[in-house]
Image 1 (spheres, one colour):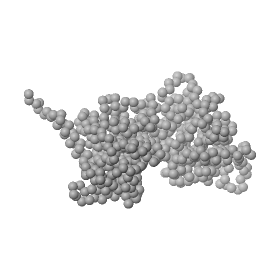
Image 2 (image 1 turned 30 degrees about the vertical axis):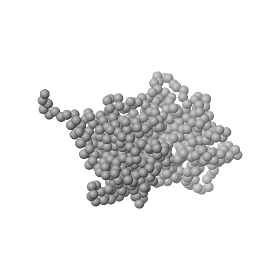
Image 3 (image 1 turned 120 degrees about the vertical axis):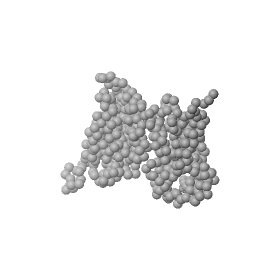
Image 4 (image 1 turned 90 degrees about the vertical axis):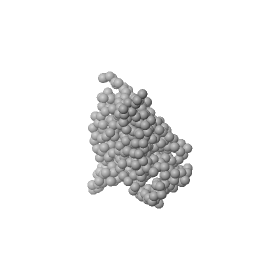
Length: 231
Length: 293
């Protein structure tokens, strides 16, 4: 039996979509999420101080993303609405990172298989625990895959090289300054033997989920604060 | 709460662009969760529910103090003697409530989420006037309940970073049941004992008050309210239940610790042992135009 004209196998369709999404994501600059002594540190290469790649979702939950801004911003806002709705109708302690990660995974999975184009995004939902053992990092990819990561997550352009470098320097219980310096050192790694780059505070977006803070753990650092931590 | 009822898709309300109001989101997506909506009262029907009583607010050169007594009443019965009626709204504002306690507390909870939601969606905080207007809207939505006796009358106060004169950055807003919003100057009070509290503040207030002066003035005002209004609770020394006193300054919101309020209250009570009516205002100020006692 001959194939109808224009037939494309499902395997090919999925592969094309995945390639399309991966290309879009790899074009962006890197975002790094890692654990440190007091919680979770977010570092993004982002010269804009208005359009964020890292943000607060709820008391203990933060969000980081790379890829197409309008797509992940859409998902971020939906996440804030989900979290606030759940916290308002139940209790603040009933909002969890796992719930958000699960919902995001299903949304992304549905979009990947049913929409004409997949979302070109990769995201991390991070939740800070009472102790370091309770810290959670969920990495979500364009097809709805979700992974529970240990230690750190690197997303976006040049992610593999940055992750390799960070494997050598990241350990549990890093102080904030140490962690940030390790993150920036890994992000400025020259891709494929090219020239080492420099990243200054104004090209970085830095935030933490700090378990020592009351109620809302998320805190964004100003350029000046970032600079003094890097020194 | 199954969010993903529709085959792995969130309802469209979650993706609505351009809206940063949580109350609007609830009204569209889950109107049943709005304060008071779950009560289906028939015309002419009344409900007996605990009422909160007196809230006072006093501005000072560093910001504003809001304080409330601890009593809730239901008819002639004291429904609760340690209720809290002053809440943090966000980092730089707070709200005190008089009226039907159940609805008021839920309304405050919605207001708190409303401010935080805006902050997270927009990445910036609302102006103090913007916050005051949002509260207006929430109260207006409760008008139906208010017509049936379940009114909520809040007092909103905060620190305005945009003020041209930072010594006047502490601002107070009062509301009527229809959501009408009125800015008050220097001091204000709401609730059943407010007439007496305002009378006291009129004699005590001075515009060079610092934080400690303003806190002491609120304790005096609440004492006077409790003195003449049976629904306002005075300081309960035997049970060590004292007013809730909250301060908002450039450093943010702070609830005065019980030990601090205990000291202030003890001082007021000691003074009243010799002078039950409280501090005397001079009848003829000696040529001091700035002294408005």
